[in-house]
Amino acid sequence: MEYILVREQYEPAVALIQLNRPKELNALNTQLMQELRDTLQQLDKNDSVRVVIITGNEQAFAAGADIKQMSDKSAIDMLVIDQFSTWDQIRRIKKPIIAAVSGFALGGGCELAMMCDMIIASETAKFGQPEIKIGVMPGAGGTQRLTKAIGKAKAMELILTGRFITAEEAQAYGLVNKVVPVEMYLYEAAQLAKEIAQMSPIAAQLAKEAVNRSFETHLDEGLSFERKNFYLTFASEDQKEGMRAFVERRKPDFKGK
Ligand code: CO8
Image (tube, rainbow, N blue to C red; front, side, top):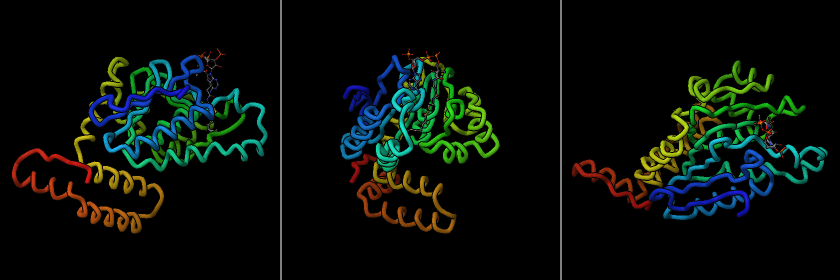
């Protein structure tokens, strides 16, 4: 891997992926996104990992897609390169993913953070979709996910002006889960990851899938999808263990089976 660093057991059952093109503010070139996709797919199959954290560095989570790599491309080049298939594969990762964001999360960087399931931000984080300033628009889900996260009025403002918002504003709008001092954001993300890693990984994956389904369907179908996943948890040993542990007044030991 050239552009990402991976620590498979950053905490017990928690993997950490660090985007690592610091000189380019972690601009997301094709290779970085492919490395990220490959790593996430491997971690998704790895039973010793239950939660993944994606982070950058203090200065930047990611300042967007690599503008230099895209600048001379034609529409047909972009169609043939088809970078979004990589993004689509990342979207299908089953395990919970937490974005630990400090500094810039712009354009594709903001879209990548929003593709994660939760965002922990440092006080210095800045979110935005500034594509309009370079004559394009969000292409990796920004118009959809930002609108769903913060509502039409604010999303429209950010996407049409390219303005950035602070971590505090992002939290007030419901985009991020928690804002902490810069020296704490990775620690805080790890705490959240460790808490989720204690749960049944089967229930966590089925719940993640059901929450995400709410963005794609109407209530009736979403409820029916949720119900089927709920029933499916009863096929797991973790469901037996979880309920038995409750009755026996002890902590459950979930095995992911
Ligand atoms: N792409 C390529 N290089 C970048 C990018 C980027 N997105 N962002 C920063 N860099 C590079 C700079 O070119 C510079 O490199 P060099 O020193 O070699 O010139 C280095 O990183 C440091 O950047 P700055 O000197 O500009 O640092 P500043 O602190 O002055 O400014 C900013 C930081 C405000 C973040 C500024 O760099 C900036 O505006 N960056 C671009 C932000 C942007 O427009 N992002 C959106 C890109 S388009 C996009 O994301 C579309 C996504 C959908 C498609 C995804 C799949 C194809």
